[in-house]
Image 1 (cartoon, one colour):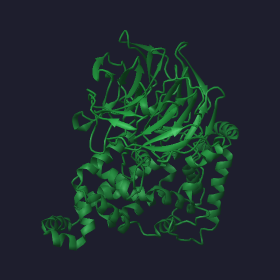
Image 2 (cartoon, rainbow, N blue to C red; image 1 turned 90 degrees about the vertical axis):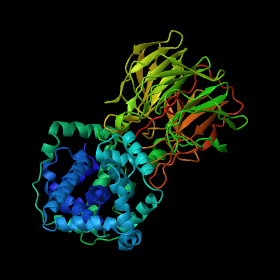
Image 3 (cartoon, rainbow, N blue to C red; image 1 turned 30 degrees about the horizontal axis):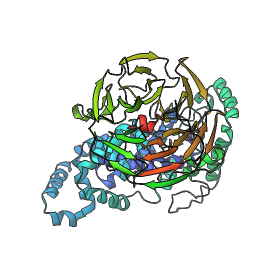
Image 4 (cartoon, helix red, strand yellow; image 1 turned 180 degrees about the vertical axis):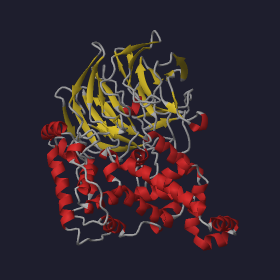
Length: 615
């Protein structure tokens, strides 16, 4: 299966260097931002960015995994920066340059800002940060990249990237983010950068590679058959036609505000997302309407904000009250417990704190007690993540916490579901892998038992109970989103495949109302934050589109009280920055007056039974 990048690379190796402009346009901001994070000089970063793309084109024939072009480009960038720094240190004038730079630091504030206020202020601020923080801030501000894109670019988990961004911003002076925004506009790459690179590479000959070597004939045939079943051919043909159109018109380039390619032939963001790296179709949120049957239904209402804005938290319902527990505020980890009464629309905050600081944990409710299970915090040496196996029971009536037997497998971003008085801890992320583990907890005996593994190891998914446990969406190995829905029967200890959700999403939340499952919010594989609401009916194994949530967000919780769903907290990012929310919105599915049976259908979701870092 050829990905978009793979098709462009094949075109280049087949003697059509003009196609390389697609890759330059797609990745130039990320390369430029990464170069600046290493060099801390905008003009040198521009030169390095040009050098990186020329090197990449010259060595395209050596790239064995075409779907890994972005990671390969990142390595070329870092190596080029190292060589640049090494070369600069050997230049005859290097000693003078270093002395000059030091003298600039000794200037008065007025002279400093008169020289170049923005450039020097940004440089000074980033110089005060460790390299890992410089990288993520540069990619975020100057590269305009999402957490998901930075994660793929640096081959680091989304959870870690999100944490690094938050910690880096916390270390900077208040005015620096504004300076970064100014610098972003002032020191951007020249408007003709992409076409300049294309003109250069047109004069470079590279060794072609046979498509048979790239994809063995037998495998190619098998992929073609599979593609026919999945209707992938249509998407690839559209992309190929687009490149063909561009190559035919490359002699008449246009430079537009939105990019260097004519909008009608080059707007990758609006093209179908063909592949998630395994060759399976991963529809974007915008394409969801074509995948799910259309049906409006339900209304949203604004409610009283949560006292402390949080994401990463968890929630459970006892006696028609919603308890919000743990997670992260804009300032720090949160251990407080807040009680929300949907009837009076009021919050009560004077509750006993959770003993263990954590986020990315899950909760299950048995006999009116809330069990907080697993999770993660970054309180290890050098702020390293600590994966937790801790289990703590909260009694809302007594307002008291009690330590219980640890979960056998320490993990975060798991999901917890309750069936017949037993708690099932499913999946999540262990320290070095995605976990397929399913472990059953008996609150009466305070003991754990091993169960059949989940078919596909994943984290950042949602699970709900509707007689059986339904595991939906999430993140799988290789930082890829999955649309998979799997049904677990705790009695038989067996798994069964169900209809995929229309849009692959992670860090969303799901709840059950009257036997139907509502998947709300989250993030798609492209880093788009969703307001999407889709309903799954286990009886018919079908999905239906519903009324969007007013506030798009991920890392939220949803809880059900009296047939209504309450979406609480989360994050919707603002100009690329973490934006932790206190918003509460009530969703009425439109079944008022119908008999609702909640027995055995306690919603135990990503939102209310686990919260993912997904950083």
